[in-house]
Image (cartoon, rainbow, N blue to C red; front, side, top):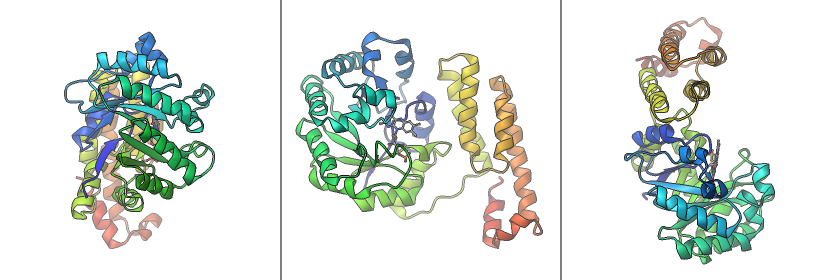
Length: 349
Ligand SMILES: Cc1cc2nc3c(=O)[nH]c(=O)nc-3n(C[C@H](O)[C@H](O)[C@H](O)COP(=O)(O)O)c2cc1C
């Protein structure tokens, strides 16, 4: 078994910096952030920022949002002139209200005829493969309907189907419907990728085992944890359990991530610092005193100040760990077995 492990498309998240860090730590394939088809046709400034890339940001694909087959084709052709993409994905999964109102995103799940037309039009005119990102349903679980939608994609020429194992109504919470993904995999000849709740190697294996899918999309599991790609690969290949990242490894990758944002993100300084703060907090999730860390990060006004703060925060985490691991009388310490303390002490390199 050699499943593909891709970074999922995530609007507002998978910018050039995020992709470069994910690739450095094992992501095989990435997507640009989702692009609105009308905005691509009009050549919006924002879209030009979203398709910023560099040579090592490859292989890469793009995802288009829209409901009009002609606009989608126009957008796809314009996009292909601007960037070198491996395939073009159609978004039939976005649950945002104003998108649904326009009949796009997950609304296409309720309108298979339009979805089929969009796919057919793109497949007939483009020289690159066309794929579709689906959810398992719109507002209820219905395996038969889910399979019909996926079959419509295949019949119109889609070359891969990515399925987020939740309905539109579930948005991003609740259990993953592995049964629907499995039924789709069993009904189609084209590759099927599973998405949803892939937060660690065990959950990646669960998705693969329960559905028989050909690959997986890692989404929120990669926030502040770009090591997840290699960890999944090593676990699937050798059964190797992931190691906790040392504080120094975390600091190094967080600083590299922020440096990429500083270098490549074309937004105003205040927004950029705010965005960097959000990214930094992903890496401090679950750390001691994260509320206080968030408060201090939110006060920062420059990149240099943020880097200094991060240096000092990692020092304080290190002291906390040394102190915590050495204090047997502390109430929280009681719940730590000797094994955990040992692991804890290995962490503060
Ligand atoms: C912040 C965020 C933005 C997302 N944007 C997109 C998007 O633009 N296109 C898309 O197909 N899916 C999008 N997704 C869905 C993910 O690709 C993925 O299918 C979903 O999060 C389930 O995986 P997870 O439970 O492992 O996070 C987004 C998810 C998140 C959390």
